[in-house]
Length: 252
Image 1 (cartoon, one colour):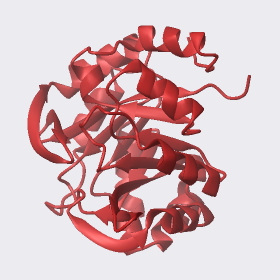
Image 2: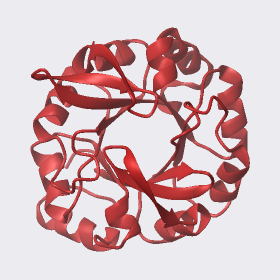
Image 3: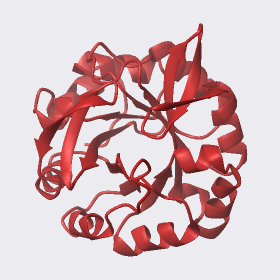
């Protein structure tokens, strides 16, 4: 049977509202984060991810007050990211109710931060988010909300992150994000093969079949999506039934 595959809705937060775009651009308001979090917690989500998507660009910390409000209304694991640069930032978010944190730009700029956080809080608490784009026949890491290219190949970076103590990789394909044409299957599979830690696939979900594909052919341990869940285009209980029919182990 193996470990169950996780279904993870994502709340991309800007100005206290849930937003969603395409390729990280053209953001539209998707509603109240606390209400959405409560809905997902009650309707089969295995975990919830909260990403304060402009915190790094605006050089400020994640909204701890909003994190606390969400944490109080859900009973599933809760990961929070955006603008995390120090051990103190993580203490603040864990005290507000987060179970895990995700770091992205700050980890690329200072890879030793992964080691610091893993040592302080345990690897299980540290998710390294990797925003990746296909260019020049390879996949490269982008930071600062997908706006700045690093020239670092994604496969090299995930290996380094894992070696530094990351507990999971959140792999988001900017190329596929919001397109609803499916996840970056081959890339997800390559990344999953390159590291021994769980890989969460993100970017491109449009149908239940895309989840089947990313678990069977992409070898992902979890799959994250946003707009198709927010808009109720795909309902998590129905998705889990489809996954079960396809012999993919899920929590019911």
